[in-house]
Image (cartoon, rainbow, N blue to C red):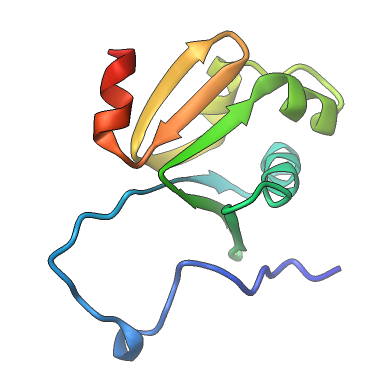
Length: 118
């Protein structure tokens, strides 16, 4: 199995088109680890999610919102994952991160949708 997922958000500078639009993308970057790989493999099964494996990092990107279910991640990992541990494993994120409860972390690319949880 290849460590490279060909459908990713990165493109060559020559292929970029700059537009005056608002992106509703969101995502996380994680240092490559056992936990990050379990999360990435699970999230790659979700519609609209793009996973990119880089030499020392893994990117998970989506449009609108990405929902991370701690029970699903715990099952994939084989041990408990909490929202607080999840935040430790994410090096960085873009979009608005909201912890809905002890079981769910959501990243919103649409800031208006995130306002409902403030």
